[in-house]
Structure formats: C-alpha cells, structure tokens
Amino acid sequence: MGEHLLVSTGELDSFEGLHNAVKGSHVDVMQLERGKLCGTLSHVGIGDFSLSIGSFNVGVRTQRVSTDEKLIIGMLLSAKDRVTHWAFDMQPGDVLVIPPSIEHDGVFQSASSYAAIRFDLTDLPRVFGSEPRLSDAETWRQKNHYRADSAIGMVATQRLPQIVSHLARHPGVLSENSAEFWKQTIVDCMTATIVTSLPPDDYGNLPSAMKMVRYVEDYLEAAGTRPVHVSEICSEFRLSRRSLHRAFHEVFGIGPVTFLRHKRLCAVHSLLRQSAPGQTTVTEVALQQGFIELGRFSQYYRAMFGEYPSQTLGYATK
Image (cartoon, rainbow, N blue to C red; front, side):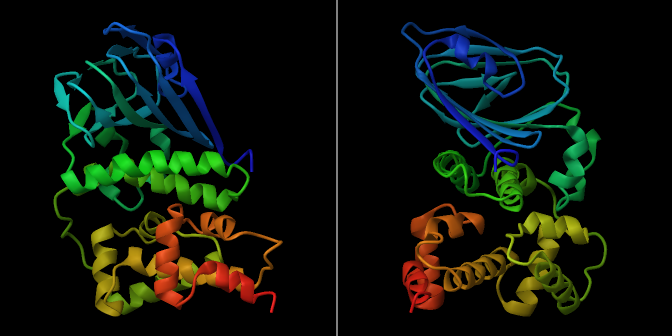
C-alpha cells in the first residue's frame, strides 16, 4: 500500500512548521499575532499528487517564491478573522488558483485552516478529463480566485478533513485503484466551485442516452470490483458531467453519481457475501469501494438491501 498512498500528520509548535504548508513547496512565514503558534499539518500523497491541510491558532503572513513549477489550488476551510490572498478577501469555501512560477502572498489575521492540492500541468487531462475546458494548461497560467457557492463550499470544507482523518486511520486498506479513486474525490472537492462557475456547455450533439449508458455499463463491467469515479467516466468518453447527467436521467431517472453509488453498494454486498468475518471487516470493504462516512454508508446500505452490512457479512458463515 505504501507506494500508492502516504498520509502524515504532525503537530505545529511554531510558525516555522508552516514553511512546508503545501507539501513540496517552500513558503516563507511570518507570525502576526502574539502567542505561541499551535496547530496541525497533514499531507496526503498519491503518486506525485498531494493534498495538504493545515490549521493554526494565530495570525500569519505567508509568501511563496516563484520557483515552484507545480500548479497549486487552495481552499480556505475556516477563519476566525479576515483572510486575504493578493487583493482577494476570502471566505470559507473560496478557492484560489496559484499558477506555476507565480509569487503569492497571503494574510491570515487570526486562527485559520486551509487545504491545498499540488500537481503538474501535464496531469491536467487526467485530472480534469470530465471538463475539457479545464484540461488546457493555458486555463491555469493566470492567477485566479472563485467565490464559493454556500452549499458546495461548506460540503467541501467539512469533507476534506474527514477524508484525511479516515485515510490516516486506515493506512493499509486501500489498493492502487482505490487510492486513485480517493485522489479524484479530493480533486472534485477542491474544484467543485470552479466547475460550477463555468458557463453551460451546450455545444455539440449528445449521443443517444441509451447508447451512452450502455458504453458506460460496459466500461464498469470491465473495471470489475474496483470503484470508478464519475470523473473517470467523463474523461474516458470525453463527456461533460452535465451531458452524462442528462443521459442517465433519461434512462434510469437518476443521475450518474447515484447510479455509481448503487453500483458500489452492490459490489460491497457481493464482497461481504463472499467473505468470512475473520477475513475482512465492513470498514475495509467500504473504504475499498470509496465509502468514507461509515454511518452514512450503513444507512445507504440498509435502505438498499434491507439489512446492515454486518448482517450480510455474518450470513457468509451460515
């Protein structure tokens, strides 16, 4: 598992600990408020991709030098007081785009927390295959910021720390395929605000809904039991999410995200039926299939199958 996903979490006891606020990118930091700086800094690494989440209890000024060749997308998770990046006043959930080799400075006037992802521009087609307009490197060569939709932003600010927390508690569970799924989930959380700010993509002709759904189902069958993210499907078939959503609603009356969740629930059910309690746990199987909020997963599962996942696993021994 080690080569697929690495998770590290450490305590901060001074502003110097924030020099590595974004993994792999040096940040100069100056403390602004009186008091001993305390906080936490976590990094999730999946190949060359990284997610960093930090929190601290006093105000700081941050400056990033222009030598980093990676693209950084940042999100403010929480703030006790004013936070500015360049001339942009940020609110929790807002997203910041820092292009390669662009100097950046931020001011956190008091206790705050943030998240940031870092990757190569060459990875854009793979990361944003579901949105061709975001796959072009030129789109990301200018610094930018996006004001969060209240609902979308709040979901992301809560979900990102949950993902890090759960992955840190289960470091040996995920396969390479599952790690890739969670990478895409992290990207989607960070960039949902950007995607929803795009104008409608009403260009081109949508293939017949039934034909498209059949292509997707063939792709899912070939993937076997590994979890497939909706962004992977969009990238594979060069479709936007809106186009895929229309096709699935026309055929099934539900969107592709719900369809894929049902598909993953069915995969969990089959895996639990094939396993004995001593061989695996419900948590392990759920994480392998992309479920991280286990309470909600259990609710989905019971609503779908009329029993709890632990009951399905128990039946395997009878």
